[in-house]
Amino acid sequence: MRAGETLLATGQPGQAWTCYTTVLTLARRTGNRYQQGHALIGLAQVSRQQGQHDQAADYHQQALTLLRDIGDRGGQTEALNGAGETFLTIGQPAQAHGSFTAALTLTRRTGDRYQQARAHHGLARACHATGQQDQAQQHRQHALNIYTDLGVPEAGHMPTSASPVWAGPSTVTPAST
Image (cartoon, rainbow, N blue to C red; front, side, top):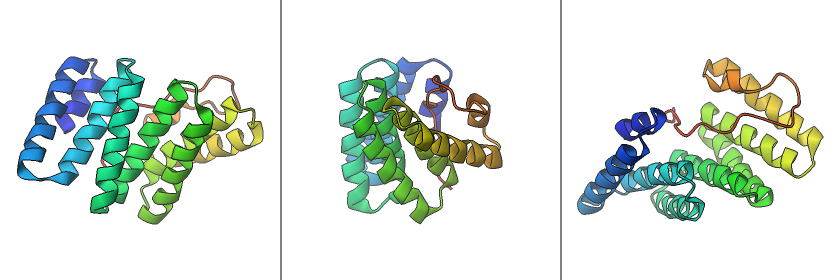
C-alpha cells in the first residue's frame, strides 16, 4: 500500500489506482479484510483527488463498514477522516463535522496522534465553514500543536492565526502508530 501512497503523492493517480485495485483484488481472494479496508481507503483518496466525490464517499463507507467489522480502530479513524475531507470538498460541513468528531473520539482511544491532529484540522475547517470561529480556532490550535510535536510537514501548512483559508488535507497519511 505504501506504493499507492507514494504514487498518489507524486502525482500519479492512475498508477496509484492500479496499485490499490490490485491490492483489493488480491485481498478479496485471500480473505484479508484488513488489506481490503485499507485498499478501499486508497481508492477513496484517488477518487477524491480526481474529483469523483460520490465514489470517494462510497469507498470510505465501504472501508469503514469493513474495518468496523474486524475491529480495526486505526483504519476506522483514517476512513472517518477521509470521509470528512470528502464532505468538506463537496460543501457539506455539517456531515464533515460528524465524521471528524467520530474520528477524534476514536483517536482518543487509540492514541494515534497524527489522526487526532488530522481530525482537529478537519473540525477546524468544518467549524470555520459553518461560522463557528472560536471553535475553529481551538481545533486549529490543537492540530497545529500536535503536528508540530510530531514534526510532520502539515505543521508548516497551518497558519499561526485564524485565517479564512487553510491548507487542505494531505492525500497521503502515514501509518498509524
